[in-house]
Amino acid sequence: MLIHSIKTSHLRFSDHFIGIEFDFIPETNGVPLVCDMSSNVLTRPIDISKFGVIFAGAQKNAGIPGITLVIVREDLIGKGLSVCPAVFDYKINAANQSLYNTPPTFSVYILGLVFKWVLSKGGISAMDQHSAVKSSLVYDVLDASNGFYHSIVKKENRSRMNIPFRVGGPGGNDELEAKFLSEAKSRKMISLKGHRSVGGIRISLYNAITLDETKALVDFLKEFQANNQ
Image 1: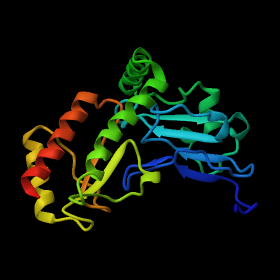
Image 2 (image 1 turned 30 degrees about the vertical axis):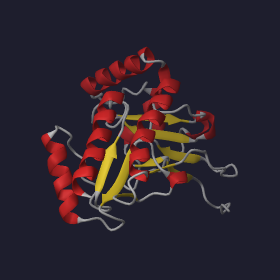
Image 3 (image 1 turned 90 degrees about the horizontal axis):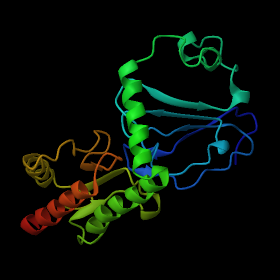
């Protein structure tokens, strides 16, 4: 139950550290919902009218580092704290068409290319279906491994974008996980090491990852288990 004195509620729609993702928009009883969509922006249809503020770093699904997408409900513009720097003030940015300061032009250019690419592939709904297929392929292997691969997230909370798991059991086997990362790297599968706060392995399936690339990873998962169980 929300406390009425709360002025905003904050939600991270998909957490890339621990691999959880909300598949619903929580009810806030009129309190503006501020949402970080950095991990799953452009991956599923969203009713933006349910949010007060949406922000998303572009570097995961929408482009390259250096730019953040921000959608602000009009009635919330102009309510920033007096200590807020001008470059982050929504009222100032809105009044200047997001050009109050020199924008990161190359990041903006890449963002535009990504938008065009998403549209060319069928739009957000197509990205949603694409993400569901890719993540299901990986989770199916983990769940069928008889405990060799251990997913650390309950099925109902699992992220389609980031899949953390342990190799060799619930607590992981350091030797096996190091071997997994080494062999994956030899196949040009990189950045699979889990976040330092979680450990283990983490697979990221952002929009740019293709179905064929996902299938290659799934084949490696099966092969590694067969050779090391």
